[in-house]
Length: 524
Image 1 (cartoon, one colour):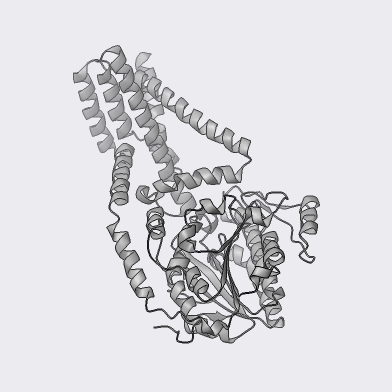
Image 2 (cartoon, rainbow, N blue to C red):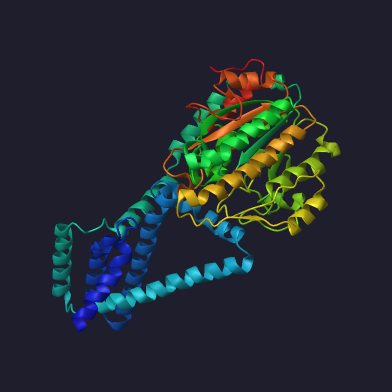
């Protein structure tokens, strides 16, 4: 009976380290990590009571760490379409924490955090109990060593031993430590980008003082063209607005561009766009902020533009923004300045249409907006989980009426649990249509001469995107056709419907925009 209980404990310990979502039968495979930990637990019985207890708790914590690492290795490809990269992804943990508290009410987020900590503590305690039970038949160090050798050999012969999660995690952490403390390669890349930018044209004379608006649409990716289920929902919308823009006298050119990230990491895409550096990890971002590169914003500021950052998801004091000194925005039109007091739509704290209307009403008509404006919008309504989309307000941009409208008008709701592309299709495409419509209606209504640049930050999460690359659409628009000529020279094509392939990188947009807007510009 005791032997059966020990075998059962061993199998229970092995399950979370052996199972794969795509291979349910993999639970039958033994785990090398569990074999080693059970052997060490048996050897720990030779120690005094206090030492034995300490070792058992260390082994329990090690086992839970391996389980968490194994879970991350399985989940990461499902959501991001790539394996876990500890040296890059470890630094995303603070952002996941922020995402949790931004996506839920404070009490629910707090409850979720407490539940996670409690679950880890319970798991560690249970691991200690199961390790003790599984090692019970082993008596003495000779038996423990023999057990480890025989079990590991059997696991290898059985071809069921998974690669060690503990070794994989330790190797990843060591690589992350080395990567963090040896950043010379990143600094060299930043210096090359700085030197290259010295040759870019920067007179911006083609603009003739026209405003410039950059709109980042969350999760706006090429999958909308490649996935037929998405395309049939999205293409009619593009054709409708192609016609509306044409009737309004607005010229459009579009292209695809490769983002440095996919499935998440919007701020890395924004930094890449601004700096001309392929910033695909948080360490590069940190080094970028400490560098002497000149961001896109600064070039416009030098030419007399009033530069504005519009980020409705940010609710901190602008003085506390660590990246502010690098990006050089004169004004931060963020959540407090927008002043939205209506319902929250999943992760997005402010509907995109309200953000754009608030900027138009509160800033464009303001006295300090008399100089030309360079504004970068980081819109959020099309952020996952694509379950609730705001209703679209059809009237004039009266903010009080919009708030009343949101309070009494039903939201669009979608049952999207990321279980398949077909399930996500309507929620995802509805969110993108809403965000893009908000931007395009602003483009049509704009009275001042302007150049509009609309692009995605990255492809959506893998369960929505499916197999595919990192390309996102980019559109440039203006009533002045001459402002688009420079972009056409870089391979952009007329219309909202993007066609053909592209080798253009998001890090190359700094050169594209500066040269397209300058008299001496053009592809080199």
